[in-house]
Image (cartoon, rainbow, N blue to C red; front, top):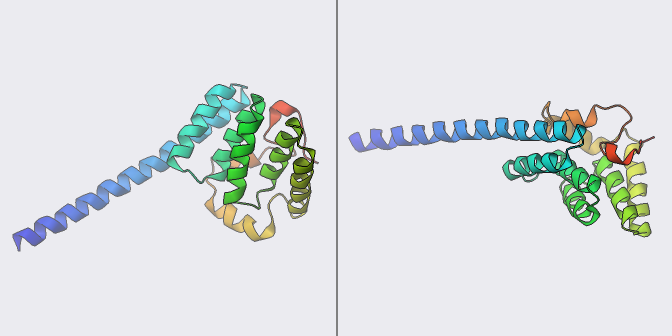
Amino acid sequence: MKKFLFVQKLCVAFLLISFVTSTCGADSFKEYYNKGIDFYKQGKYDQAGEEFKQAIELKPNDVYALYGLGNTYYCKAKYDDAVKIYTKAISINPDYAKVHYSLSLAYSKLGKTREAEKQKTIFRKLSQGGGESTSSSTRARASRTSSQEKVDNSPKKNFILCSKKIIT
């Protein structure tokens, strides 16, 4: 009986520790992500990239953090790296229109006109429904944290401010 109570207490302690560390991880993700956004807005792309990388270590499949990292690479003229990151984000959420647009810009900078046009076409199709396709918009909104909405709440402006491009 004592052995059973010990094992039960051990399981409860493990669950509590797991819960606390997972909650801290979510808070840390938000902190890194928000710092990345703030550095990005200040034009501090190296620092922004480091913050986005830290966020991605905690949530490797977060398309918004990947998008932010891709944008920092784009702004630092590391177009090949931007293409890799944007492509990963699209593999996770192919309906996120802004990533297709940014990928088209990166392909254009690399002189890959055909690929750029393909991504622009996808962007236009997805944008007709308001930015993300209707099928994924509900799912994406449900998974977004308030910190992630910083990316999407700048009206009419693309996240890639360094390119002076405006989505119309």
